[in-house]
Image (cartoon, rainbow, N blue to C red):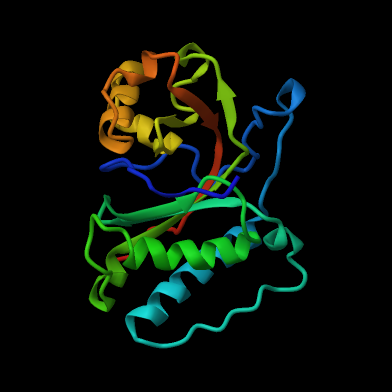
Length: 222
């Protein structure tokens, strides 16, 4: 199936869950909860620099020519990725894909530009904003279909809902904005998928879960 390009909601303030973990997320599709992947500190630093370089060049109307380091093969593995921009703690853009369709470095290269300039909820990022923007990259595990909301773990799972051609996605970080699973799923169905808010209770609605390995830029000194 083709990857789905998605504009995802993010938390309205505060640190996101699962950022810059030293261990990989649990892969829900592997027996025994075996870890699926991890990214070295150098790879994380490289991807964040790539995202910022891509966005910065675009604000200047310049080309950005990038070649991944040959000694970082993990950047060549196809991954589903979201790039999220935060400005002074608030969402400034977030776009990604739900299935791996390009090497990790290329996915970040493409989604960084999309998050900065193609998220319809915001105007294009301007050069004057760059100093106030922090970039976060979320690498997704494979999607896994669940039979009901009972299998969804608060704070751990990202969730995709779908029915009648409508789909919506929340990253795991979004749990920070909700105090209950019901409120999270109501908002996901109503706001993101444009379905009835309680559509997640309907057996005709497909529910999928995933985990993320997320990391972000360090806070800039004033």
